[in-house]
Image (cartoon, rainbow, N blue to C red; front, top):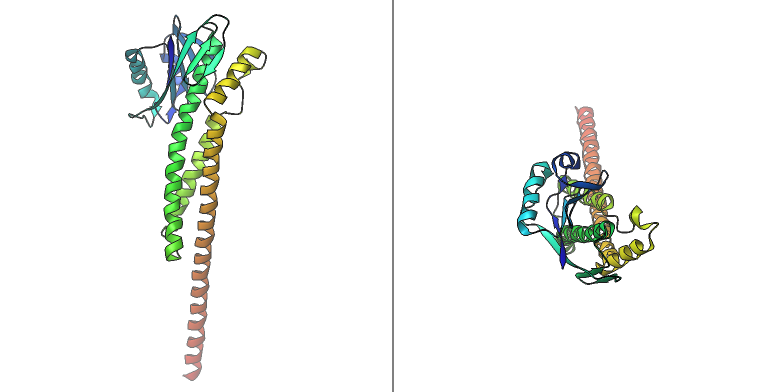
Length: 258
């Protein structure tokens, strides 16, 4: 019995620096991912958006990777979100169950798919927590608007809030490729089947849609807030212009009287 442990260790990892520091055989690399074989039947998968996944490693070995990645990480997370998947090896069997995956052999590409989907699952957990917190904060403003008939947020704070939501949406789009299949699955029917079953078991697509729907709801609310803010600002400017015109008229009237 083996296990794959995926962790959100930071918000960003500099893969170029990590690539030159880690020991082992590099099996795959691009601008977003590094996949190493560290020793027999042991693998590590590192993602630039702060994910680390270890296969068949002890807690001490994983802790060493935490320490090794920390100098090259931004927003290092002490209380890490994690997910564990058990992997069994049984000849001629390929089966994906909840938290238990049966593979016919220790195949590097199969292991990589398991680690990739486990990592995407942890990333979804993190983004789910973030968007839920944003939605709760948005609902507080809408409740205040309902009871008081006005907003309790300043224009500058609203702009920062909008920027935060847009940044999170961009990060999700850049880092999560739930609907894309890795190139290794295009020409291998068995790998493609494993990848599809993993996505289904981890419920990646439905969870992604939930996060996306939350962001859309938040965006709609913020657009409404912005419209209200713009209308309030426009009304203020109109009153300023009216007052200035009145002052000018009064001033002219007084001059004529004199």
